[in-house]
Amino acid sequence: MNIPVNTPVFNGNEKKYLMDCIDTGWISSAGEYIEKFETKMAQVVGQKYGIAVSNGTAALESAILALNLEKGSEVILPDFTIISCVQAIVKAGLVPVPVDCTWDTWNLDVTKVEEKISDNTKAIMVVHIYGLPVDMEPIWALANKYHLFVIEDAAEAHGLAYRGKQCGGLGDISVFSFFPNKHITTGEGGMVLTSQDEFYARAVKVRNLFFDSERRYIHEEFGSNFRMTNIQAAIGLAQLEQLEKTVVKKREIGSFYQEELSGIDAIQLPVPKTEYADNIYWVFGIVLRDPDLPADVVMNKLGEKGIGTRHFFYPIHRQPALIKEGCCEDKFLEDEQFANANYICEHGFYIPSGLGLTFDEQRYVVQAIRSIFI
Ligand SMILES: *Cc1c(COP(=O)(O)O)cnc(C)c1O
Image 1: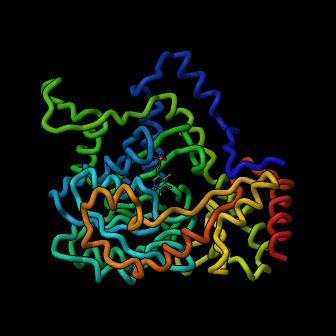
Image 2: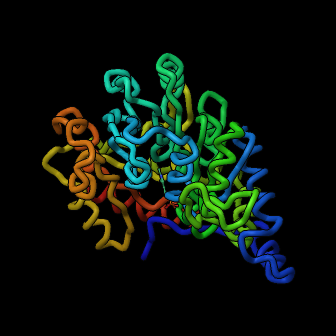
């Protein structure tokens, strides 16, 4: 058996829409699928605008630049997240301030945010991790109290609801990724979503080299080429049409693992539901409870049986790239305040749960894990 950690599935209108791009010649960043994809995504999550870009990392950079924060402003973010989040902050001349995650949901610990807010704090970046959302109500309360923007990274949260509201619609500005392991893929791709006209206007300019509408080739600021192609958007639209089915399938995979693995004391499984959300199982994470057993040991054993796994994220405060940058040393403080992120990065990994996973493959994964621990 060889079971990759993810295999994407294309069983909707992908081919039809792609052929249409080729037949009509609309293959670059102009074309009707881009607008359709942006409009439909915005509609689904309840934002006014969608701005399709080339990937999720570009979406984060565009979102940060769209807010136009003063250089040196602080942005709070989870310590347990992907490098793209902190990179977007640092590249914009802003100061990242990481906060630990909770030990069970692996999401931003909202009870530890307020103590990190200073006069210089201008935004909180929330990141929905692995299939459960951040508890947003306390975040919105803090954002109100201290006049902060909320940047929502919903790159892992297509189709996930927080108290009945779709993720991607919970921030002043929100982003998605459409990498092949996400619930909607365009190969590479991303989107910025917002309901505020000025953020929309800036994000559109950032995406396209800050071209001015008045006189072409005069540029007030630097932007980037973050444009998505019509070809990507065509696939994205077809994938978006399947989102509800995708969510059902991901939850089936997650529930099966929960049932079959719940008896093993040595491992901690994802939280199936909280008071505010039902897990969508973007990935199915496992944390080893024995502090002396690193994730690599078990990952290697599964690898020998042909089962693909991935490490959990690595804590922001320990990222070599960031330490080298030295941009925010005083904010990084002692390692101990990130005890949960430290623990799960060393003892956590995720197992195959892509849409292409068959029932037989999933049973094989379960058996392999059982044979290691029981
Ligand atoms: C995947 C992901 C991204 C980055 O998306 P790319 O399209 O790979 O650049 C950003 N944030 C989170 C939380 C992600 O999971």
